[in-house]
Image 1: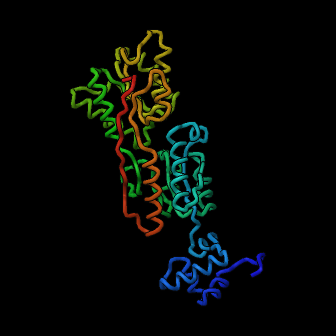
Image 2: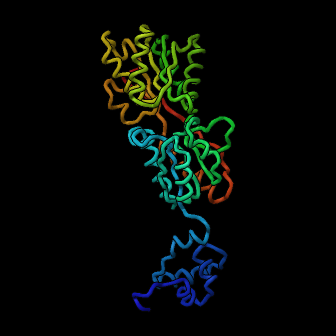
Image 3: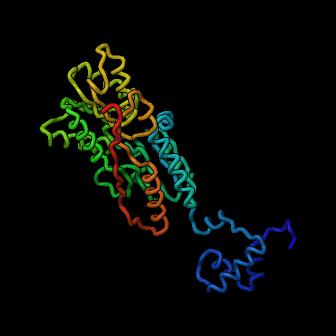
Length: 336
């Protein structure tokens, strides 16, 4: 055969002595006897035939693309270790499953732009990361009619499949730890009020404190950011000067809180005067001085769980698993 000629499925069928439809089924794991399948695959190998994946996707009505929707401002996305770490792990997890991840960045309030982007991409499914109930794009996600999986528990009443960690257990572990080391004036610096994870984490530590006859001296909510942690800690030191511990619901928040403590004129020592526990246990936790005690969540498990869940939904047309919840661990270090 001419080396410049493009080998087609018809060439393979002729070499194997079968119909084109039979060759197609044999190469695509369709109905064919073992002997026929072997003969067709041998012919394909001899002719150096490579099936056109794009053509296969077109014939199946699928693009092979999975959209990763992150409705957050771009600077926050690439500066936040949880989101950036999850994006990289999700991209790898989907690529390993033969799916093409597409990062769908959008302004949280640009509902029309987000809808237009999803329509143009023509993705087979959607993974939603960092979902805020108050964002305008939330309505677009709610009405998206293709399979989707959330990273993080969706709002109450939603039936969308999701993967998450046991956030409530993480908050409970933090409360237990602070009580064990003798702290009783405990403040909570929580994440955004329109997300489910912060409420679960706050419920967890509140339960642990209630079991010991205590309650948080204050719960302040804000973004998962260093600036938010700094501002909240400054307010706590002003309004509750006898506070002896803080549960920061992300390592970024904890880092900001530690900066505020370092700049305080009262020369507060960590952990002697004020203990701190964060949440995430990313590299930042070990880079801080003193090293941060944190609640670790397994990003690799979450990413692989979400990718497998969505792949099963696309394959079967029905999502068998409605949720996958992963355990968290307390990582004791120098701050508590």
